[in-house]
Image 1 (cartoon, rainbow, N blue to C red):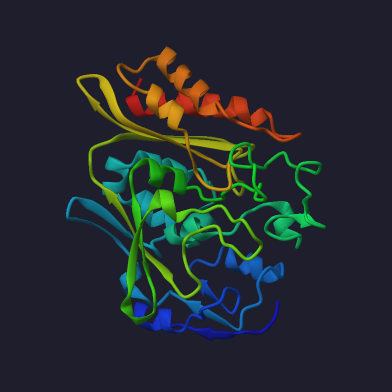
Image 2 (image 1 turned 90 degrees about the horizontal axis):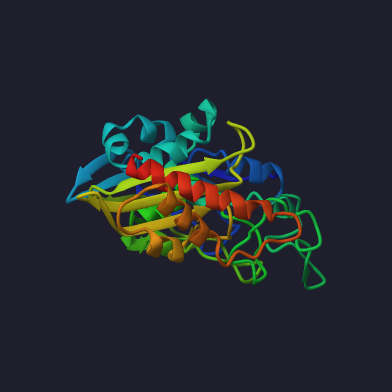
Length: 324
């Protein structure tokens, strides 16, 4: 790890002013669970690290204007323990609890979960974000058991590492980012995640001199759930996740959204499955949604098993959300 300047501003305006306009020159420190690893692995060597620990305006959870507003440096443990979150968004609680490590929950932040870099072992071992050699991807003919089965036609074949992203998108959330001069942008969660096309692209819409400041979720009374398939509980990432949200009135489903995690470079909206999710929920309908969610999958040489996991995760998430 190379030496760097450390800054700990006390407000958001000062924090954004300390960030450089180019990626890699500065880095943001929230919980540090991903950044410290990236520093040690030599994936980044910033001249300055800007800590957000003293920026009080980035902390806390509150209901306001028909929305639940979550500060970006709210810890995952605080998210899980919040009564309003538990009552309205069990999908978020399940996604956070799935991380399974008391240490990670206590230190990791909501914003950090959304902004973490890919866990792809090619990237983490210094072979680049797109894992290419001589212009060709190393992934299709290499070790790819944990890589994408959707959205992998382009050069990016890693999977989004965010645990909360799929649930937030299914719930219709948006994120607010703050930049220099007090400027802010509000971005739908579905548009926050992006698929890189070059080595210099990033996985989110966040700019180098911007800070993710807040996550807003509409309080619409949606039924929702997240189901994950993991190799082990704790200190690991899932093979597949499915987050489901829908309106349930008089026993009938409407306005359904189904979003998959860890199967594509971004949280993957399963549009065909969501269209199928109408009427009364039972095991047959849930299974139909699972089949629809798996349609269009393009597994690589070592990850076809994920197709069946998608079907099972969606089926179980649908049933859990409906309370069946």
